[in-house]
Image (cartoon, rainbow, N blue to C red; front, side, top):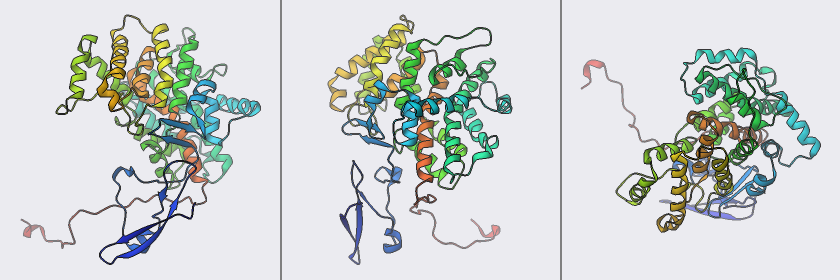
Length: 432
């Protein structure tokens, strides 16, 4: 809080209202309009909440103009180079990097919670064999409250921790089970001797017939993608989790709501859309034609995976994952796959094309993540599920931060009513 003030003059009376200006550690100031309706009788109007700060948060900082992303103050570049996903999960939840003992304990807790109640697995039998994995995720994650209702007191910090640990641990198990249901294979149980990312690949790709050896590069690439997707401030799904949680709903229901929001193609489906675009192009020979369409202001076509709503410069996550993407394609992917050749050629052209450079339409994290997932043999319909696994850490961190805030209260956005004015009911025989 600062002593800065903003003055608002409202016509026609010319009444003057003095509003507090709030400053955070970094980023733009915010004008506090909390009392604007009670004092002045007016709302503010901000479709999509693009200029509205909905909360205080100390978890993630983004500067879109400079291409900066930090978790709890730590640059994403440092965490990506030196950390693991489980360590980043601890950081996001508790605000500090763990010492060796804390990390060992936390990793042990997450590992021991990866199993799900056996009865929960029978839920999958109620879904059609080709149900979208995200549809199953929404239902199964929401049902966790029916199995783990021993710790749903959201105002008890110990019970909040237990719920957070359960969600982070069980989401990969549930996600892998969604895929197994799709392809008619038995669910693979988690292995406590594997890392978080390797364990997921084991459950996704393994069968009871033979063990599945996870390539170290695949394990590292997946862990890195989980780190990069762990949180991204007040995006649509995180805001959904917060709004659902503001009613006092249990965290399993709130994360299920977040998964629902993430399922939207404008949010979590972008990496799948990149591959759809590449498949539509079909060949390197067609790149020029599609780039010309993207430049044509009269053509609605746009290249997927380029530019970002928040980042007006390079997406820092894309810079990090680009090198790993190339390594994965070189070592693990079919070198004769025309899709990967096409992706690399499109990247090369776009980053050097004056049109894209001037408009800062650089490849974003979605461009590379979809390519990596495909190269690792992860089915396209699981791409958004991968996003959900990583983002669960951010969701529970924001949920925990919100419900432990002394100013915690239910969310209640306002509206501008554009409907009919008051009118009287008429008998059906008198209506035109």
